[in-house]
Each structure stands twice: as C-alpha cells, then as structure tokens.
Length: 460
RNA sequence: GUGGUUUUAGCUCAGUUGGUUAGAGCGCCUGAUUGUGGUUCAGGAGGUCGUGGGUUCGAGCCCCAUAUUCCACCCCA
Image 1 (cartoon, rainbow, N blue to C red):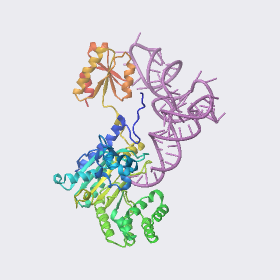
Image 2: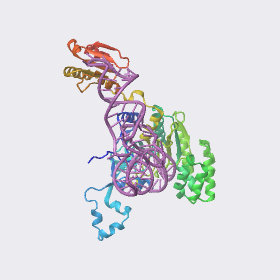
Image 3: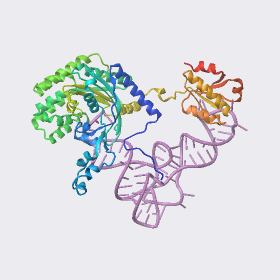
Image 4: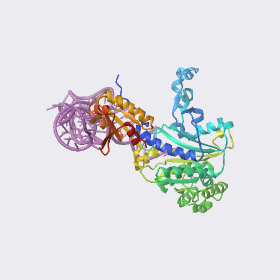
C-alpha cells in the first residue's frame, strides 16, 4: 500500500543548511554559557506526569503531551468493578491517570528543579547549570510557535544574590550582540506586581491583573481595562491599575508607584531588588534594558525579577527569550529554602529572526570539502581516491565523484552545486604524467600540478 | 480548546458560470559540446488536482468529513 509520507503537525525536518544555522546559534549560546561558568546537564525527554502536572497552570496541563502506557493500558480501567458499563461514563480527565503516567517535558526549568532535588547531596551550591534540549507543547502551531522546539536555559540555584540576575542579563547581552540581533531586554519584578495586587485589595488578584496588564503593548490601555472590569476588578482598583499603567517605562516611575502601592512590604522589597540590580547593570551592558512595569510573564512560579527579550527588527513580535527568579520551585519536590533564577533562549524563534534579517554568516552552508576529484574511468577514480585519502591525512577535506562517467560537465555541476571550490581532473594524460589538472571553479582557471603541490596549495 | 485561511508538476503559482487531452515560469533530464560547469538554442520527462466520501450525464471547481499550512484568539520560547 503506497502511503504519502508526512510528519506531525507543528514539527519540522531540518535540512543541512538549517541544521548548520541552528548549530551556529547553539554554539554561540553555549560558548557564552561556558564562559560565564555554567555546567551542562541533560534530562530525559519524558518525565513522570506527576512531576509535570500542576506546574504550569491549568492551561499548561492541557498543553502537555501525555505518553500512553505500554502493554495493556486499558487494564486498570477494565479491572474496575462495573468496568464495561462505567467506561463510557468516565471523563477524559478521569481516564488519563489510569492510562498515562509519563509525559514529554514542557520546559527545562521544572525538570531542572526535579534534578536538583534528586541530586541535592552531590551538587555544590550555588549551582550554575545550562541545558539545551527540545521541549514539546500541544499548542496550535503558527509562525514562531511550534509543537517541538528547543530551549537553551541557564539557571543559578541556591543563591539569593542579585548578582546572579545581573550575570544572566549579561548573557543575553552578549549572545544577541554576537548574533547581531538588535533586541530590547525588558525587566520587572513580581514583587511590584504583588504590591499592586495587594493595593487593589488582595494578593489573590495577582494572576488576573498580571495577565491583563501584560497585554498592554498588544491591545492598548482601554481594552486591558475592559478585560479587567470583566474579570470583576472593582472601580477603585481599576483607578490604581490605570495610574500604574500610565507610568513611563523608566526607573523614575518607581516613586509614583510608591503612592499607588501604598508603600507596602512587597513594594519595598521589590523596589530594593530593582535598584540593587540597576547598580550592577550600570555601564556594564550594551543592550537597551527597559524597566517595564507592565511586564508580567505567564508562568506562575516566578517570585522576583522577571525578564523578557524581544527583537527590535523583523516581524516576529513574540519574545525570543525570557526568565526570572523563583523562590519556591523546589519546595513542591520536598526541598525548601532554595532560591533560583534562570533565563531561556527560544532557539527556533531566534533562528526565525536571523533568517528574516539575513544575519547568518555567508559561508555557513559551504561544504567543508575543498576539492572534488573528477575522472573518466576506473583507473582515474582509484587515483583520485588515493589523492583524497592523502589530502585528508593532511587535514584537508576532499572527496571523489562516486560514479564513473565520461561526462565531466556533470561532475563540475555537482561541485558547483555543493560549493566545492576546486576540482581535480584525472584522465589518461594526468595518470601517465602523475599530475592533476586542478581547476578553480569561480575563476575557471586551471593548472596542472603534482599532489604535493596540491597539498601545499590547499594546506592552509 | 475557539474562529478564519491554505493545499494543483521538484519549487513558486495560474486555472473563467461545473464541460474534450489540467497550464506557465523556474528547476530537472537529453542533445548541439563522445575531457571542461554557471550563457545560449532545440527537444523531453514529470500531476491519483492533500485524503476519503457525496451530488451530477460530467467535478481541480459544488456539498460533507478528515489531514495539513498560515493567521487571529487563549496562552507562550
């Protein structure tokens, strides 16, 4: 049965060019991570569902890919007393834990927290780790949004110091400078948002308010206010939020905030943290850093500094990186009093931006082979093979045209298509003279030379 | 998860109110050039029209289902 091949929605194949482009970005990020003293770890693609569920909010749980149990996965259901009758009455939510106990990881932070708790006795704190691996989300795909994508995370866990925040911002600064991507780094502090929520009546409102004001740049002030009213925020609180959102994106605004938030405890702490971070940042970074009190970020576990990176050029409006401080992430796994802070690079979106802005180095997809040996019969091919091995032994990448053909044009086409700069032609004359006709494809110039001269020519 | 959109040759796309054998450009192959490519000229191959049903004498075109693409929500890297 002939079947048209396809891949699942939201996944992609990467050809040689794309893989090389992705590796270029990965290398850049990894080098900066290493230079800043971070050590690599890797965790499995799948985690126990109990590790993943409930960590990303109810929305997040729905986006988790679940892995159906091996073997007779219906056993636990059919074993029930009134099994056959009740099966139809069970909801998906009730059936799920009976048939699936593993899921694909949704991000790298939760698996990291799990790793830290499991290895706490072998870890030297503060622990600086980086991790570059794919993650999966059962989201509906669109531009810049995939079901399988890579994150590159760096986290420092086991230290409260705001120096860590600074180090991570510096990593953003350096990576995007090296990649030549103009970006804006936005920072805020969850404690300021908590202070606002408290001033509006209750800390319970934090999530509602955060989600609302996070949309400010996208839908505008009026619509944000409308949404918050619909969520049941009272008029007095609305006035406070309005005043909050009217503040210019500058650190000076913090003084106005003091009044809006009644200078409550959360506010005082948040202000302290932001100001301490600014001391570190002063004159030490090149990227535009924006204090944006409307930045909220979705993931629920952040408790202090939050950060998000957006490209200033190109059409991608979504963030290409983000992170923040989480004080209690390891608590859920039974380890208290360990604070961490981390950032993440969205590899796929960064690659999308580089692609659109044409920021990849020119010769990235050039084949490493310097020369292709062409020939007309078996004898020439064998000669070319010996030359190839000799060149490789001298550290020069080379290859032989694999098929025997009289058509030299075809062999030249091949070299052209693959950006191999030289061809070495070996026919009857060359064999008897023990020479190679070396042609440079760009200029079309060709000269006959011995293999030792060729090694010298391509040697450096 | 909600609403819309896309799918026709290897690629980018035409295809009229349903009507003979579904087209173009680029690419590919062959030859002019039996040992010299990127130019030119001549010729050629390649399509179950995303998939499965239905309506019709007749469907690329109309209807239903499904997959996929992109977009807006939701949310997020």
